[in-house]
Image (cartoon, rainbow, N blue to C red; front, side):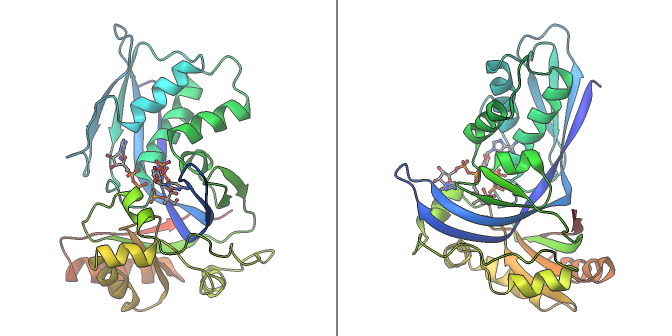
Length: 291
Ligand SMILES: C[C@@](CO)(OP(=O)(O)O)[C@H](O)COP(=O)(O)OP(=O)(O)OC[C@H]1O[C@@H](n2ccc(N)nc2=O)[C@H](O)[C@@H]1O
Ligand SMILES: Nc1ncnc2c1ncn2[C@@H]1O[C@H](COP(=O)(O)OP(=O)(O)O)[C@@H](O)[C@H]1O
């Protein structure tokens, strides 16, 4: 193998929609962390190929097209367009994250592919601006996934402010098995002119302090998504009914919801309980990296 890159799940702990641009994209203000669970992209030498091939394996491989529209291959083509070499490569995606689920699986894969290709075949003159523009063209979430550490994202998601003194967060992710189209959830938004996030403290001592602060924030896309898919409310209720859940909320445009816990043992017990109650749901106990 030539190399591999991890594509962690993106969790929007808070997501305020603060405006709408003339081109239809929404301005947002989001507090974002990245989980220890994610996809993996591997690159294998394939000497006779001029364009990379892609094969997809793993628990969520079924139903995801490995054709040229896949974000892994789109990212590879963007790397080539910027002057990077992509011949002689076969790419493999190990798909562990549910598709179209508000945790940025596709965006994380695109960002991980860019990171991987940067190590295997560095761009001749890869300025930070080139990389950011390339990432943003692939998707509004791709710049934040390129960084994959706790951050505040503004603009349409491309303006990134890394956060320091951020606690590691034990959490449970629950996806009730429904794929959600991001544009359709944005269309259901009643108000696009919400207030930005409140002022951040200098540091959050621990998960409980962060959860306390998050209570005054929202995911502005949650009400519309729940209206269309009431099963999201069931997933939130299942998390809220567990012992030690500090806060439960939807991530991104859904349908994945997260619950924050003070420690990993409580998160694990909560995940076991929800999985037993809803064997058809995707339920994982994980942690989001601190800073
Ligand atoms: C909602 C968020 C929050 O992090 O997450 P996900 O639900 O995708 O995980 C993102 O803003 C999603 O970013 P991403 O999934 O990269 O979106 P893109 O592919 O660029 O855009 C898909 C569509 O979503 C809408 N869109 C996306 C981003 C944005 N800031 N405003 C928008 O209105 C547009 O209708 C756009 O055509
Ligand atoms: N590698 C990929 N992983 C996931 N989805 C992908 C990928 N490539 C293209 N897509 C398409 O992107 C859409 C959004 O997927 P995803 O990024 O998982 O959504 P979300 O950001 O809401 O979790 C899906 O409908 C899927 O068809």
